[in-house]
Length: 492
Ligand code: TRP
Image 1 (spheres, rainbow, N blue to C red):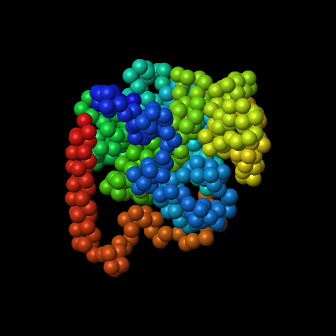
Image 2 (image 1 turned 120 degrees about the vertical axis):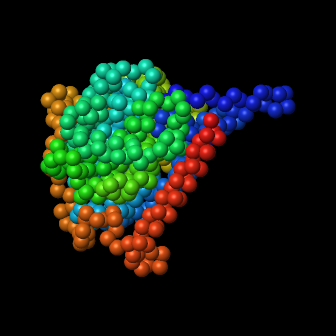
Image 3 (image 1 turned 135 degrees about the horizontal axis):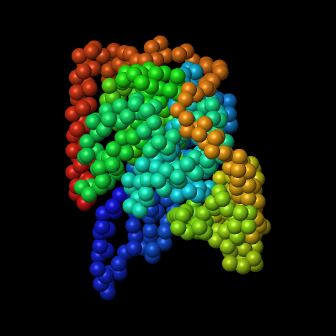
Protein backbone atom coordinates (compact mmCIF):
# COMPACT_ATOMS: atom_id res chain seq x y z
CA UNK A 1 0.00 0.00 0.00
CA UNK A 2 1.20 3.52 -0.67
CA UNK A 3 1.97 5.84 2.18
CA UNK A 4 -1.57 7.00 2.90
CA UNK A 5 -2.34 10.67 2.76
CA UNK A 6 -3.18 11.92 6.26
CA UNK A 7 -6.95 11.60 6.60
CA UNK A 8 -8.91 14.83 6.63
CA UNK A 9 -9.70 15.76 10.22
CA UNK A 10 -13.38 15.39 11.13
CA UNK A 11 -15.20 18.64 11.77
CA UNK A 12 -15.17 19.59 15.45
CA UNK A 13 -18.32 18.58 17.28
CA UNK A 14 -20.54 21.24 18.71
CA UNK A 15 -23.49 20.66 21.00
CA UNK A 16 -25.94 21.44 18.24
CA UNK A 17 -24.10 19.59 15.50
CA UNK A 18 -22.90 16.06 16.26
CA UNK A 19 -19.97 14.75 14.25
CA UNK A 20 -21.21 12.82 11.25
CA UNK A 21 -19.59 9.42 10.94
CA UNK A 22 -20.97 8.90 7.48
CA UNK A 23 -18.45 8.15 4.74
CA UNK A 24 -18.92 7.05 1.15
CA UNK A 25 -17.64 3.75 -0.18
CA UNK A 26 -14.10 3.88 -1.48
CA UNK A 27 -12.80 1.23 -3.88
CA UNK A 28 -9.30 1.21 -5.35
CA UNK A 29 -6.65 -1.47 -5.88
CA UNK A 30 -5.13 -0.90 -2.42
CA UNK A 31 -8.07 -0.13 -0.28
CA UNK A 32 -11.66 -1.24 -0.25
CA UNK A 33 -13.99 0.46 2.23
CA UNK A 34 -17.74 0.16 2.38
CA UNK A 35 -19.84 3.24 3.14
CA UNK A 36 -20.64 4.09 6.76
CA UNK A 37 -23.92 5.70 7.82
CA UNK A 38 -24.48 8.47 10.38
CA UNK A 39 -24.61 6.01 13.24
CA UNK A 40 -21.33 4.45 12.21
CA UNK A 41 -22.91 1.29 10.72
CA UNK A 42 -20.99 -0.24 7.87
CA UNK A 43 -23.19 -0.49 4.79
CA UNK A 44 -23.28 -3.02 1.99
CA UNK A 45 -21.27 -2.22 -1.12
CA UNK A 46 -23.26 -0.47 -3.80
CA UNK A 47 -22.05 -2.33 -6.86
CA UNK A 48 -24.48 -0.69 -9.27
CA UNK A 49 -23.05 2.68 -8.20
CA UNK A 50 -19.45 1.65 -8.79
CA UNK A 51 -20.34 0.20 -12.17
CA UNK A 52 -22.02 3.45 -13.11
CA UNK A 53 -19.21 5.58 -11.76
CA UNK A 54 -16.58 3.64 -13.70
CA UNK A 55 -18.79 3.15 -16.74
CA UNK A 56 -18.60 -0.63 -16.82
CA UNK A 57 -21.47 -2.71 -18.18
CA UNK A 58 -23.64 -4.81 -15.88
CA UNK A 59 -23.85 -8.47 -16.90
CA UNK A 60 -27.44 -9.02 -17.97
CA UNK A 61 -29.49 -12.07 -18.90
CA UNK A 62 -29.23 -11.30 -22.60
CA UNK A 63 -25.44 -11.49 -22.46
CA UNK A 64 -25.63 -14.72 -20.46
CA UNK A 65 -28.02 -16.23 -23.01
CA UNK A 66 -25.58 -15.38 -25.77
CA UNK A 67 -22.75 -16.83 -23.68
CA UNK A 68 -24.64 -20.11 -23.39
CA UNK A 69 -25.62 -20.18 -27.06
CA UNK A 70 -22.05 -19.61 -28.24
CA UNK A 71 -20.11 -21.73 -25.76
CA UNK A 72 -22.70 -24.46 -25.21
CA UNK A 73 -22.10 -24.13 -21.45
CA UNK A 74 -24.66 -23.12 -18.88
CA UNK A 75 -23.24 -19.95 -17.28
CA UNK A 76 -21.39 -20.58 -14.02
CA UNK A 77 -23.51 -20.04 -10.89
CA UNK A 78 -21.41 -16.96 -10.12
CA UNK A 79 -22.56 -15.48 -13.41
CA UNK A 80 -26.17 -16.63 -12.98
CA UNK A 81 -26.23 -15.08 -9.50
CA UNK A 82 -24.37 -11.94 -10.62
CA UNK A 83 -21.54 -12.45 -8.14
CA UNK A 84 -19.46 -11.73 -11.22
CA UNK A 85 -21.64 -8.79 -12.04
CA UNK A 86 -19.97 -6.45 -14.46
CA UNK A 87 -17.82 -6.49 -17.57
CA UNK A 88 -16.07 -4.58 -20.30
CA UNK A 89 -16.27 -5.92 -23.87
CA UNK A 90 -17.14 -9.51 -22.92
CA UNK A 91 -19.33 -9.45 -26.03
CA UNK A 92 -16.22 -8.88 -28.17
CA UNK A 93 -14.57 -11.92 -26.58
CA UNK A 94 -17.64 -13.94 -27.54
CA UNK A 95 -17.25 -12.63 -31.12
CA UNK A 96 -13.62 -13.75 -31.06
CA UNK A 97 -14.60 -17.21 -29.84
CA UNK A 98 -17.34 -17.48 -32.48
CA UNK A 99 -14.72 -16.90 -35.16
CA UNK A 100 -12.50 -19.53 -33.59
CA UNK A 101 -9.74 -16.97 -32.98
CA UNK A 102 -7.42 -17.24 -29.98
CA UNK A 103 -7.48 -14.93 -27.04
CA UNK A 104 -5.44 -14.76 -23.85
CA UNK A 105 -6.88 -15.24 -20.38
CA UNK A 106 -4.99 -13.28 -17.72
CA UNK A 107 -5.42 -12.96 -13.99
CA UNK A 108 -3.21 -12.50 -10.95
CA UNK A 109 -2.70 -12.18 -7.26
CA UNK A 110 -0.68 -9.99 -4.97
CA UNK A 111 0.98 -12.43 -2.54
CA UNK A 112 0.67 -10.53 0.72
CA UNK A 113 0.67 -13.59 2.98
CA UNK A 114 1.30 -17.30 2.69
CA UNK A 115 -2.28 -18.32 3.48
CA UNK A 116 -5.15 -17.96 1.06
CA UNK A 117 -8.79 -17.84 2.16
CA UNK A 118 -11.97 -18.69 0.28
CA UNK A 119 -12.26 -15.12 -0.98
CA UNK A 120 -8.89 -15.54 -2.70
CA UNK A 121 -9.69 -18.83 -4.41
CA UNK A 122 -12.93 -17.57 -5.97
CA UNK A 123 -11.38 -15.63 -8.88
CA UNK A 124 -9.15 -18.61 -9.61
CA UNK A 125 -12.02 -21.11 -9.51
CA UNK A 126 -13.84 -18.87 -11.93
CA UNK A 127 -10.81 -18.43 -14.18
CA UNK A 128 -10.36 -22.19 -14.34
CA UNK A 129 -13.97 -22.57 -15.37
CA UNK A 130 -13.51 -19.94 -18.11
CA UNK A 131 -10.42 -21.76 -19.31
CA UNK A 132 -12.32 -25.05 -19.45
CA UNK A 133 -15.15 -23.41 -21.37
CA UNK A 134 -13.05 -21.52 -23.91
CA UNK A 135 -9.97 -23.77 -24.00
CA UNK A 136 -7.50 -20.90 -24.28
CA UNK A 137 -4.02 -20.15 -22.88
CA UNK A 138 -3.89 -18.57 -19.43
CA UNK A 139 -1.26 -16.51 -17.63
CA UNK A 140 -1.34 -15.94 -13.89
CA UNK A 141 0.83 -13.08 -12.59
CA UNK A 142 2.01 -13.23 -8.98
CA UNK A 143 3.01 -9.71 -8.11
CA UNK A 144 5.60 -10.13 -5.36
CA UNK A 145 7.21 -6.92 -6.64
CA UNK A 146 3.93 -5.05 -6.15
CA UNK A 147 3.51 -6.21 -2.57
CA UNK A 148 7.15 -5.42 -1.81
CA UNK A 149 6.75 -1.91 -3.21
CA UNK A 150 3.44 -1.13 -1.55
CA UNK A 151 3.84 -2.74 1.83
CA UNK A 152 6.26 -0.98 4.10
CA UNK A 153 7.35 -3.98 6.13
CA UNK A 154 7.78 -6.79 3.64
CA UNK A 155 11.19 -8.03 2.51
CA UNK A 156 11.80 -9.26 -1.03
CA UNK A 157 12.77 -12.81 -0.01
CA UNK A 158 9.69 -13.06 2.15
CA UNK A 159 7.20 -11.96 -0.53
CA UNK A 160 8.85 -14.27 -3.05
CA UNK A 161 8.23 -17.19 -0.67
CA UNK A 162 4.59 -16.09 -0.23
CA UNK A 163 4.28 -16.11 -4.00
CA UNK A 164 5.59 -19.69 -4.21
CA UNK A 165 3.15 -20.87 -1.55
CA UNK A 166 0.28 -19.00 -3.20
CA UNK A 167 1.20 -20.51 -6.57
CA UNK A 168 0.84 -23.98 -5.05
CA UNK A 169 -2.55 -23.00 -3.68
CA UNK A 170 -3.58 -21.69 -7.09
CA UNK A 171 -2.41 -24.90 -8.80
CA UNK A 172 -4.57 -26.84 -6.31
CA UNK A 173 -7.64 -25.24 -7.86
CA UNK A 174 -7.01 -27.63 -10.75
CA UNK A 175 -5.32 -25.74 -13.58
CA UNK A 176 -4.01 -27.69 -16.56
CA UNK A 177 -0.25 -27.20 -16.82
CA UNK A 178 -0.37 -27.58 -20.62
CA UNK A 179 -2.45 -24.43 -20.96
CA UNK A 180 -1.28 -22.39 -17.99
CA UNK A 181 1.81 -20.27 -17.35
CA UNK A 182 2.17 -18.98 -13.80
CA UNK A 183 4.89 -16.44 -13.10
CA UNK A 184 6.30 -14.73 -10.06
CA UNK A 185 7.30 -11.24 -11.14
CA UNK A 186 10.70 -11.04 -9.45
CA UNK A 187 11.66 -14.36 -11.02
CA UNK A 188 10.19 -13.93 -14.51
CA UNK A 189 11.55 -10.38 -14.87
CA UNK A 190 15.08 -11.65 -14.36
CA UNK A 191 14.78 -14.86 -16.37
CA UNK A 192 15.79 -13.80 -19.88
CA UNK A 193 12.36 -14.88 -21.16
CA UNK A 194 10.99 -11.43 -20.33
CA UNK A 195 12.55 -9.39 -23.13
CA UNK A 196 9.27 -8.68 -24.89
CA UNK A 197 7.48 -8.10 -21.62
CA UNK A 198 10.12 -5.55 -20.63
CA UNK A 199 10.13 -3.85 -24.01
CA UNK A 200 6.34 -3.57 -23.77
CA UNK A 201 6.62 -2.21 -20.21
CA UNK A 202 9.13 0.47 -21.20
CA UNK A 203 7.08 1.49 -24.21
CA UNK A 204 3.94 1.68 -22.09
CA UNK A 205 5.75 3.67 -19.37
CA UNK A 206 6.69 6.22 -22.00
CA UNK A 207 3.03 6.64 -22.93
CA UNK A 208 1.81 7.25 -19.39
CA UNK A 209 2.43 10.46 -17.48
CA UNK A 210 2.60 11.02 -13.75
CA UNK A 211 -0.66 12.91 -14.06
CA UNK A 212 -2.36 9.86 -15.47
CA UNK A 213 -1.26 7.50 -12.69
CA UNK A 214 -2.11 10.12 -10.11
CA UNK A 215 -5.59 10.35 -11.59
CA UNK A 216 -6.01 6.57 -11.78
CA UNK A 217 -4.48 5.51 -8.46
CA UNK A 218 -4.16 8.57 -6.25
CA UNK A 219 -0.33 8.42 -6.28
CA UNK A 220 1.26 11.58 -4.95
CA UNK A 221 4.58 13.31 -4.59
CA UNK A 222 5.91 11.00 -1.89
CA UNK A 223 4.78 7.74 -3.53
CA UNK A 224 7.84 5.64 -4.39
CA UNK A 225 8.72 5.57 -8.10
CA UNK A 226 8.50 1.79 -8.26
CA UNK A 227 4.75 2.11 -7.92
CA UNK A 228 4.54 3.94 -11.23
CA UNK A 229 6.64 1.36 -12.98
CA UNK A 230 4.70 -1.48 -11.44
CA UNK A 231 1.42 -0.11 -12.76
CA UNK A 232 2.82 -0.39 -16.29
CA UNK A 233 3.80 -4.02 -15.66
CA UNK A 234 0.36 -5.09 -14.48
CA UNK A 235 -0.97 -3.41 -17.63
CA UNK A 236 1.34 -4.88 -20.28
CA UNK A 237 0.84 -8.30 -18.70
CA UNK A 238 -2.43 -8.18 -20.66
CA UNK A 239 -0.62 -8.12 -24.03
CA UNK A 240 -0.13 -11.56 -25.56
CA UNK A 241 3.00 -10.12 -27.21
CA UNK A 242 4.62 -10.06 -23.75
CA UNK A 243 4.81 -13.88 -23.82
CA UNK A 244 6.03 -14.98 -27.29
CA UNK A 245 7.20 -18.38 -25.92
CA UNK A 246 3.57 -19.37 -25.25
CA UNK A 247 3.14 -19.47 -29.06
CA UNK A 248 6.56 -21.00 -29.60
CA UNK A 249 7.92 -17.68 -30.94
CA UNK A 250 11.49 -16.46 -30.57
CA UNK A 251 12.12 -14.70 -27.25
CA UNK A 252 15.55 -13.33 -28.13
CA UNK A 253 14.68 -11.10 -31.06
CA UNK A 254 13.97 -7.41 -30.44
CA UNK A 255 11.03 -7.47 -32.83
CA UNK A 256 7.83 -8.00 -30.95
CA UNK A 257 4.98 -9.75 -32.73
CA UNK A 258 2.38 -7.47 -34.28
CA UNK A 259 0.07 -10.44 -34.59
CA UNK A 260 0.31 -11.32 -30.89
CA UNK A 261 -0.14 -7.68 -29.94
CA UNK A 262 -3.44 -7.71 -31.82
CA UNK A 263 -4.74 -10.70 -29.86
CA UNK A 264 -7.62 -9.95 -27.47
CA UNK A 265 -7.29 -10.59 -23.74
CA UNK A 266 -9.92 -11.34 -21.10
CA UNK A 267 -9.23 -10.57 -17.44
CA UNK A 268 -11.40 -11.98 -14.65
CA UNK A 269 -10.75 -9.88 -11.53
CA UNK A 270 -12.38 -8.24 -8.54
CA UNK A 271 -13.80 -4.81 -9.36
CA UNK A 272 -11.08 -3.02 -7.34
CA UNK A 273 -8.50 -3.92 -10.02
CA UNK A 274 -10.39 -2.06 -12.73
CA UNK A 275 -8.33 1.18 -12.47
CA UNK A 276 -5.26 -0.67 -13.79
CA UNK A 277 -7.10 -2.00 -16.73
CA UNK A 278 -8.79 1.28 -17.58
CA UNK A 279 -5.28 2.58 -18.00
CA UNK A 280 -4.41 -0.23 -20.40
CA UNK A 281 -7.71 0.11 -22.27
CA UNK A 282 -7.16 3.84 -22.72
CA UNK A 283 -3.65 3.42 -24.05
CA UNK A 284 -3.26 0.04 -25.74
CA UNK A 285 -4.04 1.46 -29.19
CA UNK A 286 -1.14 3.91 -28.76
CA UNK A 287 1.47 1.13 -28.67
CA UNK A 288 3.63 0.76 -31.77
CA UNK A 289 1.97 -2.61 -32.29
CA UNK A 290 -1.50 -1.70 -31.12
CA UNK A 291 -3.57 -4.01 -28.95
CA UNK A 292 -7.36 -4.04 -28.68
CA UNK A 293 -8.89 -2.85 -25.43
CA UNK A 294 -8.62 -5.67 -22.89
CA UNK A 295 -11.92 -7.22 -21.89
CA UNK A 296 -12.83 -7.71 -18.23
CA UNK A 297 -15.23 -9.63 -16.01
CA UNK A 298 -15.54 -8.10 -12.55
CA UNK A 299 -16.50 -9.84 -9.32
CA UNK A 300 -18.00 -8.54 -6.12
CA UNK A 301 -16.12 -9.01 -2.84
CA UNK A 302 -16.88 -12.03 -0.69
CA UNK A 303 -18.35 -10.91 2.64
CA UNK A 304 -16.26 -11.48 5.77
CA UNK A 305 -17.69 -13.85 8.36
CA UNK A 306 -18.67 -10.82 10.44
CA UNK A 307 -21.11 -9.66 7.79
CA UNK A 308 -21.61 -7.05 5.12
CA UNK A 309 -18.94 -4.42 4.79
CA UNK A 310 -16.60 -6.48 6.97
CA UNK A 311 -13.20 -7.37 5.60
CA UNK A 312 -11.50 -10.70 5.53
CA UNK A 313 -8.07 -10.04 6.86
CA UNK A 314 -5.02 -12.07 7.72
CA UNK A 315 -4.70 -10.22 11.03
CA UNK A 316 -8.08 -11.55 12.15
CA UNK A 317 -8.20 -15.32 11.49
CA UNK A 318 -11.84 -15.39 12.53
CA UNK A 319 -12.83 -13.05 9.70
CA UNK A 320 -12.38 -15.70 7.01
CA UNK A 321 -12.26 -19.38 6.26
CA UNK A 322 -8.71 -20.23 5.27
CA UNK A 323 -7.90 -22.97 2.81
CA UNK A 324 -5.61 -24.44 5.47
CA UNK A 325 -8.28 -24.54 8.21
CA UNK A 326 -9.09 -27.89 9.83
CA UNK A 327 -12.60 -29.28 9.75
CA UNK A 328 -13.00 -28.22 13.37
CA UNK A 329 -11.86 -24.67 12.67
CA UNK A 330 -14.30 -24.32 9.77
CA UNK A 331 -17.11 -25.55 11.98
CA UNK A 332 -16.23 -23.27 14.90
CA UNK A 333 -15.73 -20.22 12.75
CA UNK A 334 -19.13 -20.58 11.12
CA UNK A 335 -20.91 -21.46 14.34
CA UNK A 336 -19.32 -18.76 16.46
CA UNK A 337 -18.34 -15.97 14.13
CA UNK A 338 -20.62 -16.00 11.09
CA UNK A 339 -23.11 -13.14 11.17
CA UNK A 340 -26.61 -14.56 11.28
CA UNK A 341 -29.75 -13.09 9.76
CA UNK A 342 -31.84 -15.22 12.13
CA UNK A 343 -33.81 -13.98 15.13
CA UNK A 344 -32.50 -13.91 18.70
CA UNK A 345 -34.46 -16.93 19.88
CA UNK A 346 -35.87 -19.94 18.07
CA UNK A 347 -39.44 -18.90 19.05
CA UNK A 348 -38.97 -15.46 17.55
CA UNK A 349 -37.35 -17.01 14.49
CA UNK A 350 -40.31 -19.36 13.94
CA UNK A 351 -42.65 -16.41 14.34
CA UNK A 352 -40.91 -13.67 12.34
CA UNK A 353 -38.54 -15.60 10.08
CA UNK A 354 -34.94 -14.80 9.22
CA UNK A 355 -33.29 -12.64 6.58
CA UNK A 356 -31.10 -14.61 4.15
CA UNK A 357 -29.89 -11.41 2.47
CA UNK A 358 -27.73 -10.51 5.45
CA UNK A 359 -27.09 -14.05 6.68
CA UNK A 360 -23.44 -14.91 6.05
CA UNK A 361 -23.91 -18.72 6.05
CA UNK A 362 -26.56 -18.24 3.37
CA UNK A 363 -24.31 -15.85 1.42
CA UNK A 364 -21.55 -18.46 1.39
CA UNK A 365 -24.01 -21.11 0.26
CA UNK A 366 -24.98 -18.78 -2.54
CA UNK A 367 -21.36 -18.97 -3.70
CA UNK A 368 -20.88 -22.70 -3.35
CA UNK A 369 -24.24 -24.46 -3.74
CA UNK A 370 -24.71 -25.09 -7.44
CA UNK A 371 -28.34 -26.19 -7.23
CA UNK A 372 -30.45 -23.06 -7.87
CA UNK A 373 -33.64 -24.70 -6.65
CA UNK A 374 -32.13 -25.86 -3.39
CA UNK A 375 -30.75 -22.40 -2.73
CA UNK A 376 -34.11 -20.79 -3.39
CA UNK A 377 -35.80 -23.31 -1.13
CA UNK A 378 -33.34 -22.57 1.71
CA UNK A 379 -33.99 -18.84 1.36
CA UNK A 380 -37.76 -19.26 1.34
CA UNK A 381 -37.83 -21.61 4.30
CA UNK A 382 -35.54 -19.25 6.20
CA UNK A 383 -37.77 -16.27 5.53
CA UNK A 384 -40.77 -18.22 6.75
CA UNK A 385 -38.94 -19.28 9.90
CA UNK A 386 -39.19 -22.96 8.98
CA UNK A 387 -35.44 -23.25 8.66
CA UNK A 388 -33.52 -22.20 11.78
CA UNK A 389 -30.33 -20.15 11.91
CA UNK A 390 -28.46 -23.15 13.28
CA UNK A 391 -29.70 -25.30 10.42
CA UNK A 392 -28.54 -22.74 7.89
CA UNK A 393 -25.16 -22.77 9.60
CA UNK A 394 -24.88 -26.55 9.39
CA UNK A 395 -25.77 -26.49 5.65
CA UNK A 396 -22.95 -23.99 5.25
CA UNK A 397 -20.53 -25.99 7.40
CA UNK A 398 -21.15 -29.10 5.26
CA UNK A 399 -20.55 -27.20 2.06
CA UNK A 400 -17.43 -25.40 3.26
CA UNK A 401 -15.78 -28.42 4.87
CA UNK A 402 -16.25 -30.33 1.62
CA UNK A 403 -14.76 -27.48 -0.38
CA UNK A 404 -11.77 -27.01 1.93
CA UNK A 405 -11.15 -30.76 2.15
CA UNK A 406 -11.14 -31.22 -1.61
CA UNK A 407 -8.72 -28.33 -1.88
CA UNK A 408 -6.39 -29.71 0.79
CA UNK A 409 -6.29 -33.13 -0.88
CA UNK A 410 -5.23 -31.47 -4.13
CA UNK A 411 -2.76 -29.20 -2.32
CA UNK A 412 -0.94 -32.17 -0.78
CA UNK A 413 -0.13 -33.42 -4.26
CA UNK A 414 1.46 -30.17 -5.46
CA UNK A 415 5.17 -30.86 -5.19
CA UNK A 416 8.03 -28.45 -5.89
CA UNK A 417 8.50 -30.19 -9.27
CA UNK A 418 4.89 -29.53 -10.24
CA UNK A 419 5.29 -25.90 -9.18
CA UNK A 420 8.43 -25.57 -11.36
CA UNK A 421 6.52 -27.02 -14.33
CA UNK A 422 3.93 -24.24 -14.10
CA UNK A 423 6.58 -21.54 -13.57
CA UNK A 424 8.68 -22.52 -16.59
CA UNK A 425 8.26 -20.19 -19.60
CA UNK A 426 7.28 -22.58 -22.41
CA UNK A 427 5.02 -23.22 -25.36
CA UNK A 428 1.46 -23.94 -24.25
CA UNK A 429 -1.10 -26.23 -25.91
CA UNK A 430 -4.81 -25.54 -26.30
CA UNK A 431 -7.52 -26.10 -28.85
CA UNK A 432 -9.82 -23.09 -28.72
CA UNK A 433 -13.26 -23.31 -30.29
CA UNK A 434 -13.62 -26.68 -32.08
CA UNK A 435 -16.63 -25.46 -34.10
CA UNK A 436 -16.32 -21.81 -35.09
CA UNK A 437 -19.58 -20.49 -36.48
CA UNK A 438 -18.35 -17.20 -37.95
CA UNK A 439 -15.69 -16.61 -40.60
CA UNK A 440 -12.24 -15.56 -39.42
CA UNK A 441 -11.16 -11.96 -39.81
CA UNK A 442 -9.57 -11.45 -43.23
CA UNK A 443 -6.42 -9.86 -41.87
CA UNK A 444 -6.20 -10.63 -38.18
CA UNK A 445 -2.99 -8.60 -37.96
CA UNK A 446 -4.86 -5.45 -38.76
CA UNK A 447 -7.87 -6.20 -36.68
CA UNK A 448 -7.28 -3.37 -34.26
CA UNK A 449 -6.37 -0.90 -36.93
CA UNK A 450 -9.79 -1.67 -38.26
CA UNK A 451 -8.90 -2.35 -41.94
CA UNK A 452 -11.24 0.34 -43.14
CA UNK A 453 -12.42 2.75 -40.50
CA UNK A 454 -15.85 4.27 -40.94
CA UNK A 455 -16.63 7.90 -40.27
CA UNK A 456 -19.71 9.20 -38.44
CA UNK A 457 -21.78 8.78 -41.64
CA UNK A 458 -20.67 5.19 -42.04
CA UNK A 459 -18.38 5.97 -45.01
CA UNK A 460 -14.83 4.64 -45.12
CA UNK A 461 -12.39 7.31 -43.91
CA UNK A 462 -9.48 8.49 -46.01
CA UNK A 463 -5.96 8.19 -44.61
CA UNK A 464 -5.85 11.94 -44.02
CA UNK A 465 -9.18 11.96 -42.25
CA UNK A 466 -7.96 9.12 -40.05
CA UNK A 467 -4.80 11.05 -39.20
CA UNK A 468 -6.87 14.09 -38.33
CA UNK A 469 -9.21 12.03 -36.14
CA UNK A 470 -6.23 10.50 -34.34
CA UNK A 471 -4.83 13.98 -33.71
CA UNK A 472 -8.15 15.20 -32.33
CA UNK A 473 -8.34 12.14 -30.07
CA UNK A 474 -4.84 12.88 -28.80
CA UNK A 475 -5.78 16.49 -28.00
CA UNK A 476 -8.90 15.26 -26.23
CA UNK A 477 -6.84 12.74 -24.26
CA UNK A 478 -4.33 15.37 -23.15
CA UNK A 479 -7.19 17.63 -22.10
CA UNK A 480 -8.75 14.86 -20.00
CA UNK A 481 -5.40 14.09 -18.46
CA UNK A 482 -4.93 17.71 -17.41
CA UNK A 483 -8.41 17.75 -15.90
CA UNK A 484 -7.70 14.52 -14.00
CA UNK A 485 -4.44 15.97 -12.71
CA UNK A 486 -6.17 19.15 -11.59
CA UNK A 487 -8.84 17.09 -9.84
CA UNK A 488 -6.20 14.92 -8.15
CA UNK A 489 -4.26 17.99 -7.04
CA UNK A 490 -7.41 19.58 -5.67
CA UNK A 491 -8.02 16.45 -3.56
CA UNK A 492 -4.60 16.62 -1.90
N1 TRP B 1 -2.70 -6.31 -8.21
C1 TRP B 1 -3.31 -7.58 -7.94
C2 TRP B 1 -3.43 -7.80 -6.42
O1 TRP B 1 -2.91 -7.08 -5.64
C3 TRP B 1 -2.58 -8.73 -8.59
C4 TRP B 1 -2.83 -8.82 -10.08
C5 TRP B 1 -1.90 -8.64 -11.08
C6 TRP B 1 -4.08 -9.10 -10.72
N2 TRP B 1 -2.48 -8.80 -12.30
C7 TRP B 1 -3.80 -9.10 -12.12
C8 TRP B 1 -5.36 -9.38 -10.26
C9 TRP B 1 -4.82 -9.35 -13.05
C10 TRP B 1 -6.36 -9.63 -11.18
C11 TRP B 1 -6.08 -9.61 -12.57
O2 TRP B 1 -4.09 -8.74 -6.02
